[in-house]
Image 1 (spheres, rainbow, N blue to C red):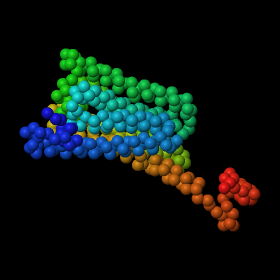
Image 2 (cartoon, one colour):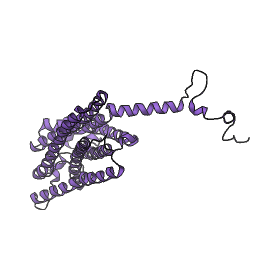
Image 3 (cartoon, helix red, strand yellow):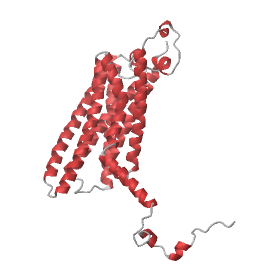
Image 4 (tube, rainbow, N blue to C red):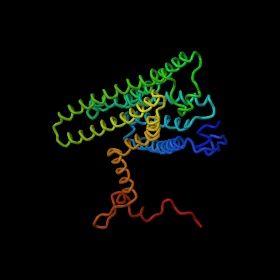
Length: 340
C-alpha cells in the first residue's frame, strides 16, 4: 500500500478500494501545510544565515553562536519535511527519526549557549573590556564542543535505551512511519529528548533572568543619560529576542510531547505539525527583523549610495575625493583606449 507521501502529496494514484474513497483529506491537507510551511521556513533560515554572514558587525561570538542555532534549525526543518507522511524505505525512515532527535537536541544546546554568552558579556562588561580574537576563538571552540558534542552523547544514550527496550530491535517502522518518521519509542523519547531538553530550557531561562538582573544593575550605575538609554534599549532588545526564541522552540517541543504521549491525539498532532513547519520562519523573522539588523542594512545602503553619487559643494567644486586629483589627471584617459 502506498504511503501518504507518495499517494497524496506527490500525485501517485492509489488504486486500492480505500484509495477510491475521499478519505484522509485532512491528512493530505495537513501534509501539504507542513510542506509549504517548511519550505517558507527553509528559505527564511537561509536568508537569516546569509544576513549574519554578510555584516562584519554580526560576526562576533554572539552572532556566530546564533548562526549555529540557525544551522541546527535548518537541519531539523529539512529532515522533517523529507519524512512527511512516511517514506517507503524503512531504513531511511529510521535514519530520519534518529537524525531528527539529534538535530532537536542541538537546537536547545545552542539556545543555551547563546544565553550563556549574553550573560557572560553582561557580567564582564563587554564595552569596557574588549575581547581579543584569541579569546573569541577559545570560547567558540568550547561552545562548538558542547553544542554539537553534548547532543551526540544524549543521542547515544537514547540509542541504548531504545535498544534495551526493543531487545535488540531499534524501532518499529510501522509506528514511526505514521509519525512522519519522527519520535522514538516512549522511554527513548522521554529520557533521550524530553528530559534533557527540559533541563536545557530551564538553564536557558535561568541565564535570561540573571542577564536581566545584571543588565538592570549595569544600566543603573551609568552616569550619562544618553548612554543609559542606549544601553537599556540594546540590552532589552537582546533579552527579549532570546526569550521569544526560547519560548517558540519550547512550545513546539511541548506540542510534540503532548502528541507523542497521548498516542497522536488529533488536535495536538495538527498543532504540532503546523508549529513545526512555521518555527523556522518565526525564528528567522525574529533574528533579522529587529532594529539592530535593520540599522546595519540602512547604513550599508547609505554607504553604497554615497560611493556612487558624487556630492557637490555650493561653489561648484567637486567632492573631496575628486579634489585630490590634479587637472591633468582629469583630462587624461587612464587606462588609454584601445586603438582602432
